[in-house]
Length: 256
Ligand code: NAD
Figure: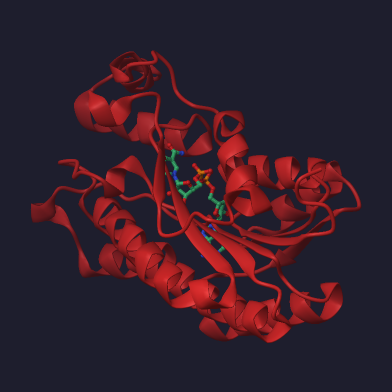
């Protein structure tokens, strides 16, 4: 029980990696608030986890709503000990085809939102004076560019930088900020990407995913289970001396 009595907020936790983290944190003794724009799905997910999980509706692009939700969680639970900035959207377009609209959407959710969620949550953590743990979800896409994924890659590179700045500012308050950079993680996100490649490149459904899995040195996609050990570690006292880091969990992708 590494997270006994800790209060965790996970944005975009209604499915995928965020949901995997919610389940793992509860198993370690935490209470988890899943804050997602898809409240129906978040509610079903929280109910399946049990009484230690709660769903709240939050569109992370709404800065006023971030403040309201964070304040409400702080009041109801007596603080927030762990934040996972997980909500993000994917976007595919080469540089010569990006649009202002997709730029605004991707950067609103993938960069502006985690910055302002960190602001709101860190102020609550500072006020309570018992430190805290912040985990930002980066990506291998933030380590190196990809021809068809311009905006998403740029937003994930920016969150790696923001993690470092936030970590250096918050260390004096006992708050550790780190990031996780997964490679490819199976789930609905990749089903959508696979379908896009099928449309763009005339591939059969599943063909892109199979090729991507083969290109990973470990030979397969990750699952949220492959990431949860690191998330629990970064959320727990075991990582008290660690800050400003971005950890690859990528099956060796970075080396290939
Ligand atoms: P996902 O697309 O399966 O889930 C994202 C969640 O965010 C959904 O529940 C969605 O409803 C929620 N969301 C979207 N917009 C929102 C908004 N405006 N406000 C609140 N919630 C919103 O994502 P995933 O694949 O589980 O990825 C989780 C994180 O890991 C993301 O930050 C992603 O960039 C990162 N990541 C994923 C992969 C991968 O291969 N899946 C790889 C590297 C990094």
